[in-house]
Amino acid sequence: MTAATMRGWLVEEATDTQIIASIIVRTHKARVVIPYSETQYSIVYDSSDNLRQRANMIHRNYNRWVYYLDNDIRRQFNLAILD
Image (tube, rainbow, N blue to C red; front, top):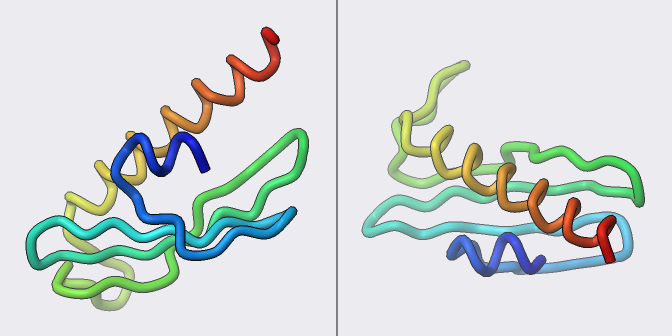
């Protein structure tokens, strides 16, 4: 949750095993589900608005937002291991 909020994502819902987060940039919105455990996580596309999503394609900004989110989650995970 820390990584998502620091990156500008809005955490909509969080449980012990899953986070649902959205990012809104101007008129664009993306929503992801982040299932996680103590040892692993994934970032799964859920929905989007105004990102030209169709079939297996989506606007390149979505991939950049998720890439940076993933890096920040890894950084937070590594910090937790060092503590």
